[in-house]
Length: 386
Image (cartoon, rainbow, N blue to C red):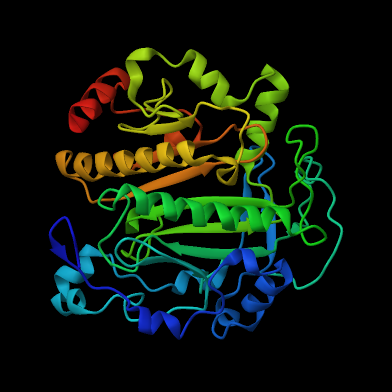
């Protein structure tokens, strides 16, 4: 099997079969999903502290997990240069040294699957309880808050070098469909386990907060090179969700509606029909990009139709392809984050954030010095896609 002509290591279906606890997340009740986490051998040693705090200046949420510092890494170039034997070590995922699988789907070559994060930032409480609405009243409470939930990993492919920029379009759509299925299951089946999401903004009742990210590279929080997405389901509202809600309350439109209306036409990278990839006029770092859904009434991945999923699959392909090429051009180690902005007030959009510039002291004060110009960045990015 090969992608882009490169023979790859992979985890075999035979090995994965020994890890499968469910083949489709839709078939599981929320309580069953929780139970698989509580019964997973190994996770208990690395579970988080179960408490969170709020920075009263910004509303940033902080979840504490001392054990997560012991995560294994296979992507530290300096260590590999000092000890070349490390480069020959097999990927732990390809070797099948991972947790039980809750969802698996065939691709044209191989398969994509979802399992539990062995080093979670969130862990289930195992109890049913009523949660008060997260309305900011806890900002000045130094006693902290209970933090619980579930932390999943979605492996884009069982093949080690397969990723969004070199996989077939149909396969990328399948990966998104399975991600959407997990998102919907968590939000729609956790009443009594998670707080109700802000009423009056999203008319369809949801419970809890689903955060979807992709970290690639040691410099931005990635620990394993094998392509994956992280999905955190939490009773703790990420600050960005509150930002989006306040945006709607202040300006009477979602952030995506505003961005589509005001972002200069010259910063458009590519139009996919239902979505557009653009450089935001407020770019904080060179080559930052945002993929925006044009239907600003939709707030979650699972609400997208077939055409919209296809547009997102194309946007992820292009965004990550651009980053892979840009980082070579600027002579920097490959490292980036992809952030899914979902939930009330957001519309739905994805941020592609290559690590092209370090964070300095001014940035910690909220004053960003960007070593690039949005118009020039958009022009260079478009030249890559020609």
